[in-house]
Image 1 (cartoon, helix red, strand yellow):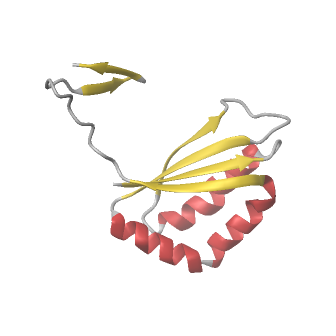
Image 2 (tube, rainbow, N blue to C red):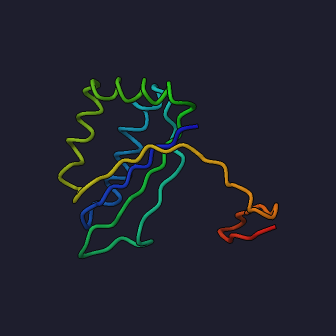
Length: 123
């Protein structure tokens, strides 16, 4: 599994529009390339009125091959280019990170780390 994390710094007053454009315009195009929207987050958890609010979108792809297919096709797709051009004026900035899961190692004494409801505990 490969994850793509898009961190969009959205100018005040545009958060709902940017999120709707991602869902309505971008998601259907990249879905055809094997990309699934896993979820959205905002930071801070409310839209700011005087500073940009970060909208974070997490995307999932099955494997590295799917990622490269997506990257190459999206770079040439006029719908993708139009999407980014269209939301550009509503953004103060954007950052994309490509990630792959890494196993959580056991501790030296055989304990393993577990995450439950946002809490980390050792067993």
